[in-house]
Image 1 (cartoon, protein in one colour):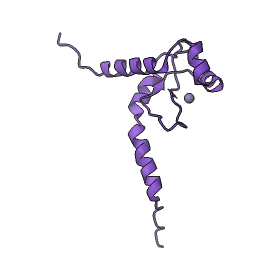
Image 2 (tube, rainbow, N blue to C red):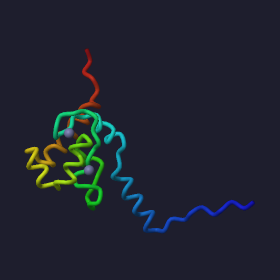
Image 3 (tube, protein in one colour):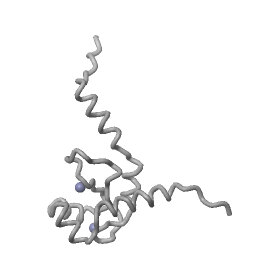
Image 4 (spheres, rainbow, N blue to C red):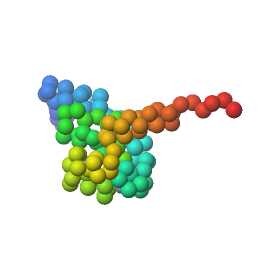
Length: 111
Ligand SMILES: [Zn+2]
Ligand SMILES: [Zn+2]
């Protein structure tokens, strides 16, 4: 019985996958998941991409911790209204998260 030919990806599909791979960082998403929700302080977050993944500029490093409820609120309200409501700037929050992520990997000072 002949094995079926492997599904061939078109050149455009391959390019799209490679672009997506450069933006993915599962370890970072896992870490964001463990942070406090920006909206209500709860733990157990579902990282939200800001800008969202439908946007050309999405990146896993541009995610913020939001619990399921606040995450739904963010999508319902839209970016401008949501960020005004929580009185924060996405770029500031994202920058602070990334700094604290890299600090969490800094080697411990010798005792
Ligand atoms: Zn929340
Ligand atoms: Zn989202």
